[in-house]
Image 1 (tube, one colour):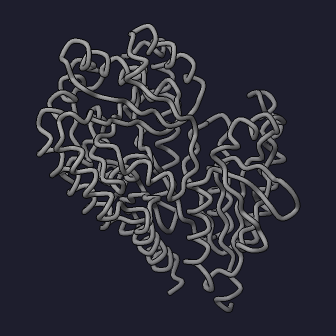
Image 2: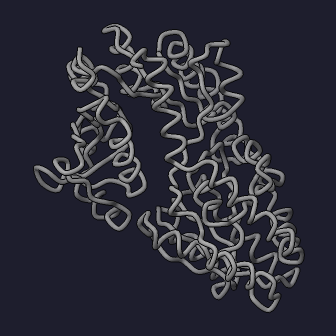
Image 3: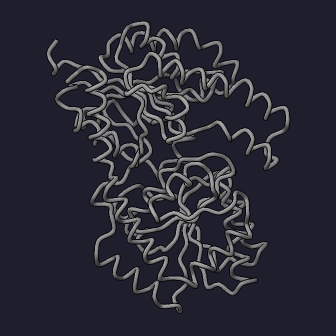
Length: 424
């Protein structure tokens, strides 16, 4: 078989919206990632197919500000619909359609040379796992990705009161065991297994060389803060009359714990006299509650909401002016924002979940006890007082981001793919 005839197929639990026969829209950072991946795998793979879920119009209108366009003909990326989101809105509908979707997955996998799939978090509707099983059955080369260590999340959700004891026990002893089973199958049968986190690799790797710890960066070299913007940031930071500018960006959903950030800002300002401004970039179902909370705490002038911003250079230029990222997830989380922040020269103050503890080795990430609003407030005040230390962390963040651009990680991933799929 000639190299130029190979097909790369990705099965993803991500949603897109089809505008017309040639144009689709999807989350802007992921759209840029796919464009870059396409250039990297060509001409070894001359066909690049993406299998995703189609958004309905209502979802599209809500997410539109954060979406970007891909022209399939121009970019050489073809999107294949698996189903429309409104068609499978309930578990019963999903179950009834599982057989027909499985048959479609078989037809798609049959045509590819390399299948890119991953963990099915939804064990009741395990699309990615079904695709992986078809890949194994059809003897395809498979790249398998797990982007979060989920094993402690059930306990965390129970401790926060978000889950009942029953939900905790079912998740820990049933759902999580099924997820672990999927990973064990993948490690035994797939060509390349990319796991986000050293502990995942250690616990599931079984010494297999094709199991790799993968840092899934989205920023490119041109996103990294330039010298002029860096000089301006450091100058502002030296001026104690200039407020400490802290930021959160991402989805405004309950498990992100942004309400705890707001409470810490109130405590730092009102009880400890800290001159701090909190910038919140993003949208989600919690946006209204978070704005209401700032009013209840009488810190409306200390918290600024921006809504969703597209992932582009203008977005990064906005980030360049901030001094510290707050990350307070209520369960395990591996957000892209951590690496994007470091590219913008923003150190991170986070709860001590496994992902952020892994990143403390960069010298640009500091962690505090999970759920402690008081410690978060105290650390905000500490960094406002010790701005020289924060300046040093900014430089370490930039250095780390230069060593870990999306291009460098994609080159590594493609080299691993070709090696372990025996395509070199």
